[in-house]
Amino acid sequence: MDVKEINADVTLDVKGLSCPMPLLKTKKALKSMESGQIIEVLVTDPGFRNDLPDFIKKTGDECIGDLDDGEGFFKMYIKKS
Picture 1 (tube, rainbow, N blue to C red):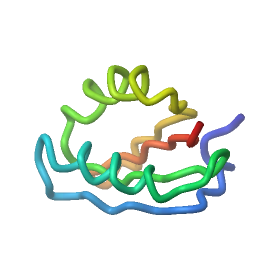
Picture 2 (picture 1 turned 90 degrees about the vertical axis):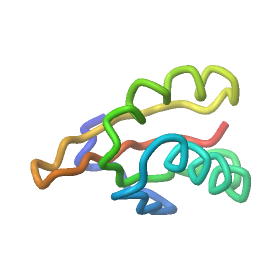
Picture 3 (picture 1 turned 30 degrees about the vertical axis):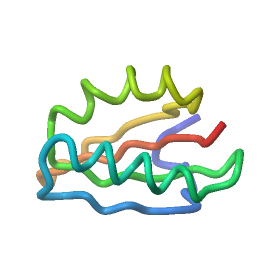
Picture 4 (picture 1 turned 180 degrees about the vertical axis):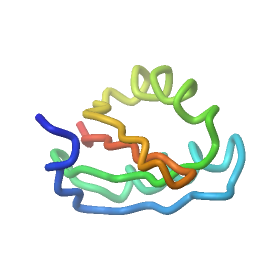
């Protein structure tokens, strides 16, 4: 699947926040979502990319893609399990 074609159900803007806030806010947002929904997380913290695989492993959710928009932040797409 081309990451540019992903239609997110929820967008979470955590730009400007540093670790651990982006991950904590993502965790909270995922709790309120239904299985199969996709969240788009807008992030500036480079550590988020490193922390996400371990987080996903614990929750059972799925990272379905990421995109560097070239404007100082990147987008991560997570599918709720």
